[in-house]
Length: 212
Image (cartoon, rainbow, N blue to C red):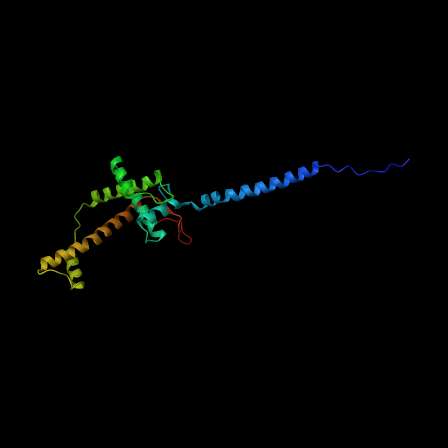
């Protein structure tokens, strides 16, 4: 007696399962696409420097650059930010502080750039305020300028106004004072940098350790 196999009856169950698998694959792809911008944002924000193991993020640096050093390069803005942070740490060691009232005034004068704010912005403003306090404490308002420097400056600027030598010397002194102050402050920042442990990962020197 011979038995012949008969094909099973077509059922809608297989079609339902196949459609379910395809739908699951599509949903997984859609979820990945939706999550990609958030993942990209996380990848773009990274540590660009550390000050005694205290990290500085790229988003913080860009906010600082837009608000205070718009014409500077990212590297130059990082130098200024690190200088503020080093000076702020030194100010805290000496017992300086920024009152809530003073910080509120700073926030009013310098609102956070779009897309950035909160505690990190307040810290940037606090660091700047502490840096100013400490530099005033360290150097005061008087900037010594030698008579030789004044004479050399006047020699290079014959257009100096003033009916008397004393008036022309005062004109030269007024213009040399900001330059001399900036030089002293930059030298002090360099001294703090040598004493502190600062690492930059923005543009590390070729073959170097990233120490600046």
